Length: 286
Ligand SMILES: [Fe+2]
Ligand SMILES: [Fe+2]
Image 1 (cartoon, rainbow, N blue to C red):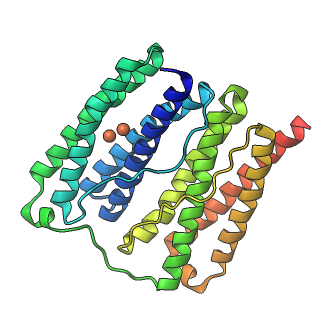
Image 2: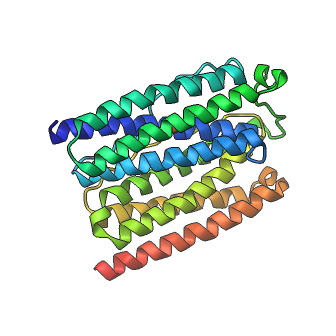
Image 3: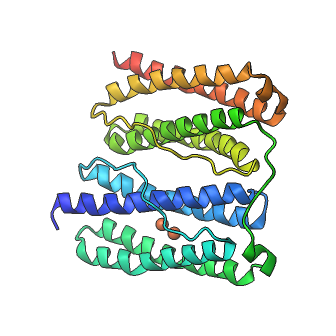
């Protein structure tokens, strides 16, 4: 297998792992993280994030551009039973898939990662099957649904910031992989992406708490090949995002939701922190 073939093979896997992260996260938020189903799905989503991370790091290390787009996650949305059955099938398919890929690669690290993706997919299939077996008839026939207390306009605006925060986080992850050879700065970008993940979770939970699927819609991902340029763009995007969040603080509907306002305040402080940090790195470079 030549390098280009390796990159496109791993990019396909990356898109699929990304799809699993998004699917399990959305489902977890809809159930509620404080329910046993929600907690279990969140735990799977975190493991899929590692899977994504190992693949993305390898792709960039061998000179590829990680494809940050998301594949489809095929599932039957009729009820919980059909949904979890779809998850079992999806994970089971990945076991031979990853093992066949592992057979084709020469690099021992890449091979080990692919084997691990296979046996962890096996574990996921087993865990989803256990959930399926234990669902009460009522749960099995139902769907996660909750009452909506927000106005449609407010929900639309929330969905917009969910999509923007998601894109920002994915951009940071992409940059941290692509610039991994730069060392510390790439490591810091990954650190920031973790804060953004938390911010995104707060926003997405607010949407899901009101019975809607958070819109994890990816915007444009910049494919900068120099870290200097990537950092300049990051600062600009952090400023845009601060402006959007500042507008929310003045919104009368937002002000009614104390939990939302607390998280918003925290997000604004964190965005300011990140922006100042990155500006410092830029000025030290010049
Ligand atoms: Fe996975
Ligand atoms: Fe999995």
